[in-house]
Amino acid sequence: MSGPSSPSAAADPDHGPDDYYELLKIDRSAEPDAIKKAYRKEALRYHPDKNAGDPNAAERFQRIARAYEILSDPKKRQVYDQYGERGISMMDSVPFLDPDMIIMMKQTVAVLAVMSVLLLVFPILISLRADGKISASWSVVFIPAYIVLGAAVVMSGLNAARSDDDDDDDASSHHRKGSRAASVVRRSLGTVYFALILVFSVLLALRLDGSVGSWAAAFAPWFAVEAFHLALGVQIVAEKFVVGVEVPAAPPSDDDDEAPAYVNRPMTGAEKLVELVSQFVPWALRLVQAILVVVKLQNDDFAPWAVVFIPVFLQGAFTLGMFVPSYHSLLRSGATVSEAATSIVASLIGTVVVLVLLYVLVGLLIARLNNGNSPSAAVVLIPVFIVLSLVFCCASVCLPCAIAATNFGLESELRGGDEENGMAANNGNGATVAENRRIEAAASAASSSSSSSSKAPA
Image (cartoon, rainbow, N blue to C red):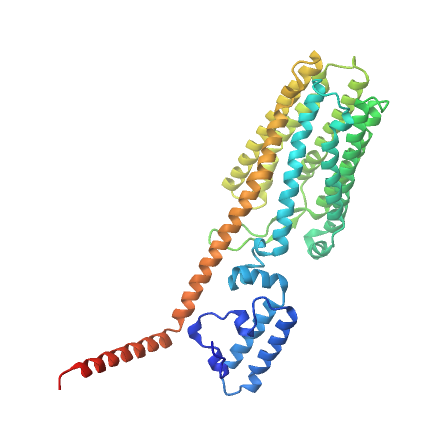
């Protein structure tokens, strides 16, 4: 490869789209200092002020600046090396191209896989211990729960300590009043929530081992969790009462492809009532359920177990009933009847499946508590095994496969696009290519004619 004799020669269009490394005349393994040095050299050489008579110098200078912008950034350079120019152009809109995002996703998948295994092992140990198959203490049986909840505390704490840049952006919107304060409270609540659940699991295991005197003391962290839930519910309701309901500024039009603008209006009395009910009825049912369980464990003659678990059944009925106001809320937010119906039906199916599993679990648990050791704990926990097995499959198989398939499809699309761009770039110089081909054809014809003439008889 011969060195360029002039700026115009270096930008020969027959070579297709420029490679950033070739533009700067460096190797692909060049260090940052070498990249900077090469950029300064090439930028000085092709600066428009020094090439006033060359119309291609300004364009060449811009491409050199672009090459330095990409290669001097470690993230962009890594994406460019793997996916080319199209990868750079799609980097902001496609998170799978960000190297940091890829590393974070892999770490998240690995953590989820480990956690799902621990969650699946935990009920297995419970069933073995409850059925007398193993003689380990309950504190040992609860070790998988300790690990999962401890990891949740750590991750929630790291999330709560992150920067508030996103909150600052939200606070600039007029319909996000108080959102920053609410976000801080929710992050902190997440850390405290998991910490209290961790303490509750420790005290529960100690109570089962006989090391804690009363069930009320073991359930104290749970009641603290519900107190936090109450505080958070009050804050959410107060914020919604102030902000109002977000509705479309104008009725949606079939001819308008743009997203509709939204405005906030004050909540009606009925909407405020629905908000209060949706926030505090589930909380009250959970609180009553915990109180009834504690009283029953302290005094076995208090009431039958079927009566103790009535709040669980009421919770399911309430959840199903809330689909009606949710449907009307979707209509008010601008969704069409078909869109709202589709969303509600999909959510309803998932909710019904969860409630069926929950009711089967509670029914089997009531039967065991009433009959002593029948059915076995393994049978009682069958709904739990079903749910956790699905979680394990999703976290360990489905999610990694989905990410791998997405990356493969993205790479195929980018490589295909690069090939099309290369062909387009080569074909885009039609006049030059056609002229070169005509010259080659004429030269070949002349050579053939000369050869024929030399072989003819005198």
